[in-house]
Image (cartoon, rainbow, N blue to C red; front, side, top):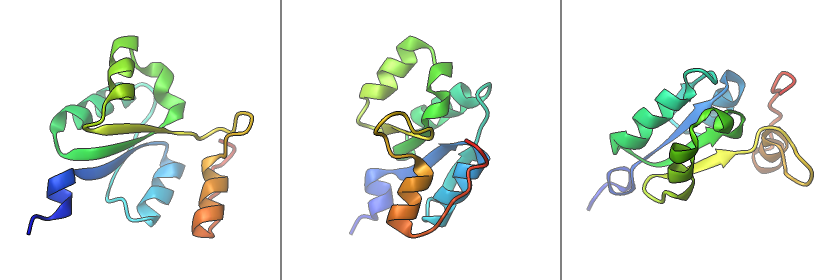
Length: 112
């Protein structure tokens, strides 16, 4: 029987240090702390590596991607790239509220 991780790929998260801790807590092993300057290169490396089926990305850095690559990853299904909302805008639920509701833990994002 084929291992599900090999069949579907691994899960990765790219984002701020504070969020990385939360994703490690929920069991995501491949967590990459990034800054806006280095983010596009980290995402490209993971995207083209073929090791990941799902790449979770802090939406804080979405604006640092060039339009062509952003369009490509936004519509990609293999790997699936999901931009995780960090800052609450309007009706969106922030990541700290989501973690508190789903996991029952409070994550202090330090003013993010």
